[in-house]
Length: 159
Image: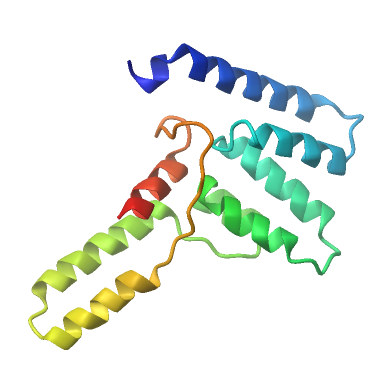
């Protein structure tokens, strides 16, 4: 059975999406309450880009005058869920999409193949190793139809 046909998965995604829509329509809630409610939704499904992006924007708004490192930690934790364009337009941290990172990795692999001197190969291996990626524990299966950036992240992480 394909992931898109899994009834339980579809029901869970629909429930979370509808709750998010209702939450965003509620003008009576302040930013802090919305952020807390969105965090509850992220504990059910942390793969929806719109929900993650809204959570990060609210986190930024709430912590804008704070010197706490909590915002930076949240951004680093969830950056793999948000597209490069959205992330870079909203936050101070520059992000490179995982699709671009995969293409760069492929070019490094091609470059490695062409190298004949051992030291040059070692330097390229060091470049591979320097690209550390934090593990992201997704709560529902990742599908390219649901979040393309997160899908590319999972491929990149497995490389």
